[in-house]
Image (cartoon, rainbow, N blue to C red):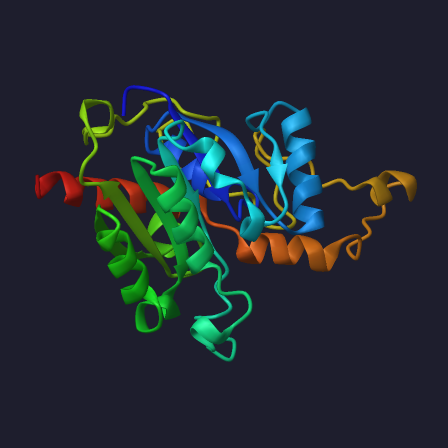
Length: 263
C-alpha cells in the first residue's frame, strides 16, 4: 500500500502485528493503542519514549474506548483480542467468558468504519467463535479472508499456530481500494547480508548487533548477576500473548493476495 495508513491497535501487547504489517510493506502509523495490562503499558511507554514506536496515546479499557471520535479518520484496525475464551488450554467458555471482547470490537468497527481490519487469535478459535466474527464482519459490509499461520514456517524453533483474519470494506472508494503490497528490500537490521530473516541468538551464543542487550536494572545493581525473577511473570505473559511479527507478515501477504485475486 503506497499511502500511509492511520491505524488503531487493540490489545496492543508489544506491537507484533504492527511490526508484521510494516515488514509486509504497509506504511502504518499507529494513532492510538488500547492495552489494559499495566506492565505492557509501561513497556509501550518506554518504547515510545525511545522513539521505537509511534507516539500515540494508550487507552486502558477497550470496553469504554471512545471509538466514535475516530470515525472517518482511520484506515485500519488491528489486534489480537483475548484468546482465553477459545483456547484449548482453558475452559473454552466462548461467549460466556468475561474476557470475550469481540462484541466490543465489533461495536468499535461499526463506529469507526475503517477500510480494513486485521485480527489474530489462537488456533482453537477456528472451532469456537470464528464463524461469528466472520459473519458479523460480512454483515457489516466487509469482505473477509482467514487462515492458519505458524511461527515455524517463518523459521522459528516453535510452532505457535495462529488464526489471522483480514476484512476489507466492500464499499471502500478509491482511497481505500485494494492494491498489491510492495515488499521493502531493506526494512530493518533484523536481516542478514543475504536478506534472510535471522532469529535472536540462543542463550550462551554471541548476540547480534540488532538485539537488545540482555541486561536488567537488577543486573547492573548486582554487578553483572542477572536477576531472572524481575518481572518474570509479566514478561512471560507479554511474550506469550504477543504476535510473532514474521507470522503476521506472511499472514497479511497471503490473505491480501487471496483477497485481490477475487476482485
